[in-house]
Image (cartoon, rainbow, N blue to C red; front, side, top):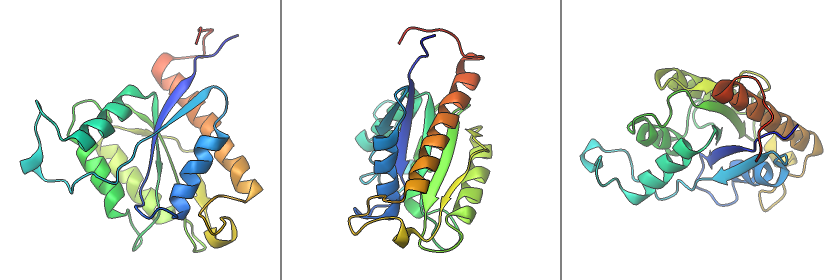
Length: 194
């Protein structure tokens, strides 16, 4: 049986180049199973959401790039830190822009992961993202969950993931998201040519 490749749009909710979450996203790309294609979306140049900047006929290039990537993908992966018990501004900003474009987030299979130097990983941030997902009719994968705790012990000085157990869990989440996307987008897995 040949299974269709699943495309996953993914972004990191951190602007720092050597952040743990950017490193986690790089690991996602490197560890993606053969039937999964990761399409990284850069959100660094997204302006702060402002309805005065919206245009249905001529969207801002970074907004169009984000929305086109999410809309064209089978699923979405958000890799985000936790700031002050909640969602970082850049993560929320990306969702605010995407939520204003018809159909971009609606019914989108979505997974969350994040890394933090603390003992709780990104539990509270991911909880708040789940609340935002409900408003946008996104379908968030419930299991497995990935909260990378004590990240300083699992990433090197360049922000690259070195922990084998975390790498294994990244692969498990990607496999589960791909299966989830297939179920939601097509029903039961079918023999489909790539």
